[in-house]
Amino acid sequence: MTTAPETVAVSAECWCCGSTFPEADLLRLGQHPEVGICLGCAQHLYRRRTERLDRTHPSVAARARSLVRAARAEAVRRGWPDRAVVGPLLRWIDRHLP
Ligand SMILES: [Zn+2]
Image: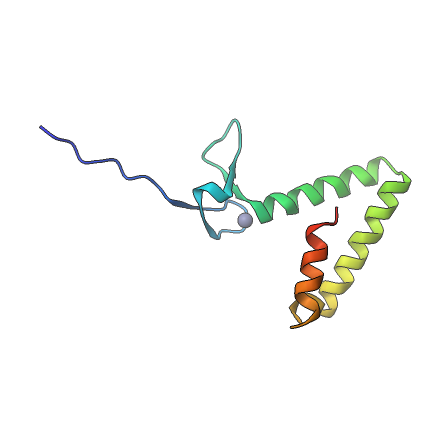
């Protein structure tokens, strides 16, 4: 008697943003491997974590990161990341910022 081959999930949904990603592009939580987070949401969570730590542990570096966050928020508010020429440049810069 033969059995049907198991179906292997090649993509899964991010538990944060709800988008679908290949399994290789998801991070799994250690104690809850059923929870997958995409790399973009992981970056977002890391920034939220850093922002919270900066509020509780003030320093010169924390102040610099706060200025970067304020500049990022203002650029997004003005819609600059969606502009044709400056948008890709801003997104490239953002990938290298804390
Ligand atoms: Zn996500």
